[in-house]
Amino acid sequence: MSTFDLAEAVLLGILIVTAVAITRARSLFVAAMLGGLFSLVTASLFVLLDAVDVALTEAAVGAGISTVLFITALALTNSREATTPRRRVIPAGLVAVLATAGLVYASFDLPGVGDPDSPVQTHPITDTYLRESQEDLHVPNTVTGVLASYRGYDTLGEVVVIFTAGIGVLLLMLGPRRPADEVKDRAYLQTEYRVLRVVSKTLMPFILLFALYVLLHGEYSPGGGFQAGVIFGAGFILYTLMFGLAAVQRVLPMRTLVVLVAVGVLIYAGVGVATMALGGGFLDYNEFNPGNPSGGQVAGILLIEVGVGVTVAAVMVAMFYSLVRRGVRR
Amino acid sequence: MIATHYTYWIIFALMMIGLYAVMSHGNLVKKLIGLNIFQVAVFMFFISLGRVDGGSPPIITEGIEVYSHPLPHVLILTAIVVGVATTSVGVAIAIRIYEAYGTVEEDNALARDAAEEGTQ
Amino acid sequence: MTALDVASGVLLLAGSLFAVTGGIGLLRFPDFYTRTHAAGLMDAAGAVLILLGLLLLAPDLGSGVRLLLIAAFLLVTGPTATHALAHAARNDGVRVWAEREDKKR
Amino acid sequence: MLSAALVAILVAMVLALARAVVGRHLYDRILAINVFGTKTVLFIAVVGFLTGRPDFLDVALVYALINFVSTVAVLRLSHYREAM
Image (cartoon, rainbow over all chains, first blue to last red; front, side):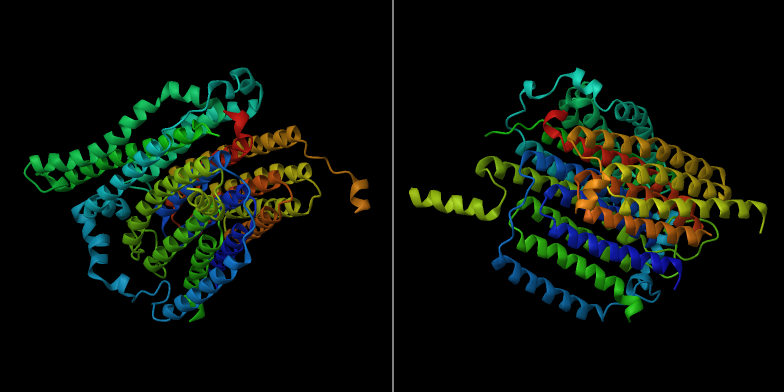
């Protein structure tokens, strides 16, 4: 048993313990925090399972953004949960146990984890993505290559889903804002947590710079538009938490964000239209540089990654803003 | 069998713990947290399918021959971000329900609906 | 085995020792403030030692710079977070542990 | 030595998890999760060196940043009404 196998087993055990603790926690605040821990562990597992890009995303999304979302929601609703009545526990438990048994039985037909002869590994597409992509695209990070070029249509669809979800949250949270007198004055903010504020302020440029690096270097190392957008969003969430909504809105007002949400999708779709105008198919980046198709590919991938990054970052920050400024109508 | 398949089994158990939380708990926010657990377990299942023994992350480097399959990574990468966007729609709906009913407990909200129907 | 390997091994082992003792302290100390002590000091020390140990093994400049950055971030954020937590806990009225209370129980 | 460090980090993770689950006080849990996050950063860095792919260090860097963001978020939002 190698160290990696041991690590995998320990992490999976930690996951089970955490998941059970989450379901048992009566305080939703605790459940949300343990949820953050849960996704830190899954992200480590993703690294062990060779999925570094996924780990990057999961860390920023799971441990950062969704924890913040849940906790903000709890501030607007109720943070304690009623006890679960027995009439619900027994049937739900029964369904869960039976379904687990069924799935485990079905898993006997699955190839083992890491089996080199499994259908996933022997399918011809594997060779396309891993070998031919190097001649077609010259993008060493095959995840970015597949995401942005081979499966460009699919990714456009995903970005539109994120766009729609962002607009949905903005519409749902259109109602009353928190009155200004509820927000404590700046003097209070200045005195409390002084160390935290200075450190956050110092870290802010590093976070944004790193997001840019992840965005622009995504073709050569783990990274890309989705990851960069989320890291960028986390940076602005940190700033909002430490300096208040009014301060951050001076840099990035809600109105700009709403525009940016759409601009990202438009950049992506616009690249597709541009390639059509140049005589190729939709999202056929070769047209950007007919003499040197892989150069065109690199340019196209970078452009749409920028589009993805803009939309994701804008949606994340806009959702957080709209939850924070929500007033409670009682 | 156990050595090669236990990862799947734990992942299935996690899925079902998430499903259990969704089914048994009446609190809408708790249901969303349970749904998140379920979702992450599905992600792990996909990623474990793309794994290959002795493989490396699919970033092509000289001197490395065996790579894990990039396709599950691509699918899950986007699914994670889409997942958080849809979760936040769920959170927003839960907040609206709280504002309308004064509770995020399913049973209380349904009971209030039933009472209102009775008075009309 | 070169001198560099030995040095990095010593650093890694020292870091591991700090990490584990920090974990034990976090679990075993009697109240929140003492646990902050275990978490804040041991965590930062263990992390930096392990990262320095890795730095000696770094194959190229890029990973060396990244390791230094990670170490710098952890060194700044870790103590800041524990400081802020202890501050918040004190404002919130979390009681300091006293031996008498413990004996009564 | 790298393997030994990895095992030590796993042990520390389990200890931090135990504190996060047992809790007692909200701040204990936040502290434990913060420690757990630091251990994850180290875990990923060490795994990167064990497999000989330093590409992983970017991931560890993101963790170091995000861990701080989430700790601050939990801390601030636990006093949400007066916070912003």
